[in-house]
Image (tube, rainbow, N blue to C red):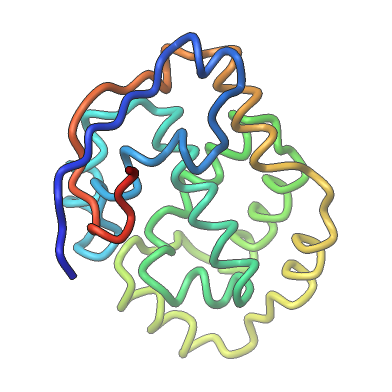
Length: 176
């Protein structure tokens, strides 16, 4: 895949007006933050960004994975590294029912969820009784609007999402 630098600007005025959707609000992070290279790299990549941006990215990652294959898929894939930030994000954005669902999943885990993928997978393999089906169903049935909550939060706190800089993106994703 070929990459090129793309200038991204998210202005206070446009954020306040609700011009951007949730994915656009995290676009500077989407291509800048690695979830594949361990917790130290993940944290280092997130340093230039605000806690709200970090939370939004994590919530969107969790949502994409759970909607694609449930909590088991979320934890077994590299995306599981964002679990703590996603929980913080659900709380920050007022997604309280989704926070409770994730808290229940974490309680079933039975110990601290590791940030390293191999350790999460070893735990999942050793605890085949972990069944997240009820949590998956509760998540799918929850009517809280993740994108709307992120956009609403950003409109009320635009300074936490303002961005003006270069991001390395796949050429296929570049805006014209």
